[in-house]
Length: 235
Image 1 (cartoon, rainbow, N blue to C red):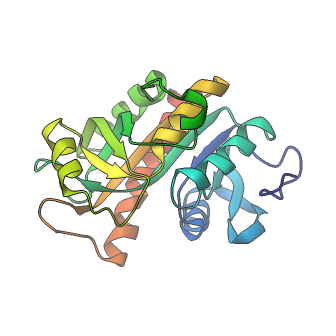
Image 2 (image 1 turned 180 degrees about the horizontal axis):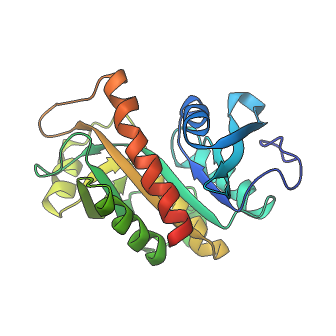
């Protein structure tokens, strides 16, 4: 057990999917895993371990934002032996050819700051995905006929952003979408020599103002989970 995760030793698989929302973790585990067992509920952050096609998998919430994800990812890696961590979550599109329900595979994650900034100091570290996972997710998405985009994303450290100039710069430089966790996950993966990927579903659009309602989000997010699971064991 750790400060934030109450799982017993051995209760967490080497492969962990990390949605931000703990209730989405429960939904994904109950929908896609066989025999899921709740292994953590400290502070309401739910985690489940089960199997997918015979492979052992944990689905554990990360909370909102990079500071929260950093806590859970550090403990999952250092204390529970997680070796493959895949963020699954929603994102806001920043390019006109990226539509609602599209899947974005984050090759890189730009950011203004992360919890690791104090360690990296003046280094402009370039956080990137594991290439094997990225390639496998790309193949899995194409096999399912998903609308896929691969490229750079922006991990923001604020939700209520009042920097329209920054959004314009991101769009101008081809950033596909914005979310709040992937950059720190990629940095931690590099530090601890584990694999990481972010598989994201577009739930809203910063340029057009479009957004999915709650029911449409749930229907759309299933495809993202399937791609992430396939990538974890093929990549």
